[in-house]
Length: 278
Figure 1 (tube, helix red, strand yellow):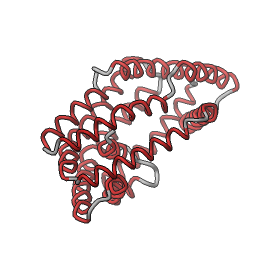
Figure 2 (figure 1 turned 60 degrees about the horizontal axis):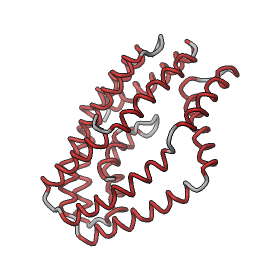
Figure 3 (figure 1 turned 180 degrees about the horizontal axis):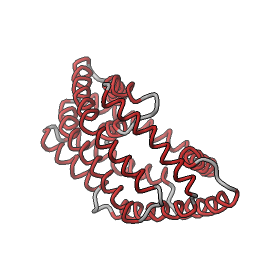
């Protein structure tokens, strides 16, 4: 809920070693393809979506990417000697500001798009949502398998960023990880519960409201309830994750922190090249 804005935001944070330029060159078509899956777009809608996305992508490349580059450089400076809670607070706040800017940029177009869709397209969206929910439920059936997948993904990311870990480090981090997975709610179950509550509301909104300004207002209210300080569950999760980051950081060696800093060098270089050579 609602995937239009979320999908745009996910796209805007995708920047891999060999995919960044492809993203900026073909992101408009990718968004159009994704929306077509949900709404079965007309040719006029496809043309409008791609035209608007090209403008948003150019804005993001020229305005936001320099900010991302500076953000990563600041992280490098702070992470060399370990992290503090105040540094994490600042980093999370800056990241949240970046998300806010993207939402504010995209909400007017998302609201306009939704104000123009047909009843048949809303019905198609409802069917796609139901299919996705069914697929999610199937994936949720084997809890042990999903826990193992989370464990493997966790270590894959850790080794990508920090390099090799000693036996002692692995034991300490695995103990923490096992404790966290046991204490934390299942993210898939949480996401499924949110979908079950929000999707009927969203569909009812689309069927009852067709004015762009009303849809914009709803989007902003939804965003604040999901991302804002008024969401106690999200706020508690962020505090919990910050504490976990500091626990992991205390186990890392200077060499492992340097490994992560060097990984960020690659990302900074990618952003610089994308900014200078569109």
